Image 1 (cartoon, rainbow, N blue to C red):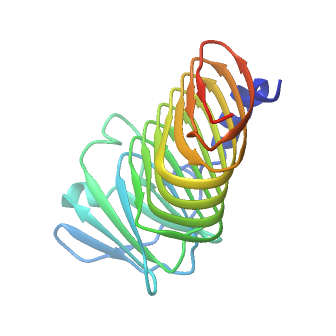
Image 2: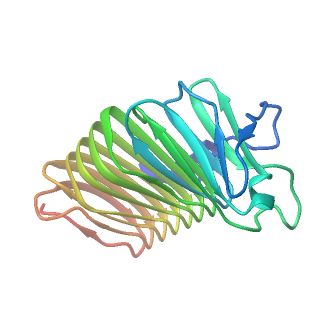
Length: 240
């Protein structure tokens, strides 16, 4: 069955999310009090690992800024690996995730966002050929306005993704109890795989392949023409 390998494939893919304990050199922050700025540019994707929320605005130029309590700001790690902006906390231990920091990022375009942990990433708008969003953990990826040829969303765990806008092709892979809430997203086609109790809602005006192994539910709207493979108690709503 096409969906049977899903429970293996998604957790393995999630292991590619960067860990803050590697040797990637951190970028020193400047500023004082409750705010720090980081001199970093030329990135097109974001990897976030940890408890902090990230607000991404697509605009002119690059900027990275953090706001929070000074003792927590001192534990924030910002780094860059190729075209990826890396965000996490320094060190480890019981206090690793304590305190709250908000990260504000401006970039000309974003092609991918990877989220591991309990923090959230919100992106105001996405345009281009392809966007790849992946979640490993309990965080939320919120895509405000999408206009892409290909939109790929993967969840391993209990995290969630939200999206609105348009995509020519939508691909969703869920392993676990994560949800994709995309009732405001219109797609011309879709490929959906669920292993577990995850759910997806979107609007597809064309062909869709749906594979469910477990109790997950799929609602692609009345215009979706679905080819369904299902094992378990999950429900699928399509037009035909």
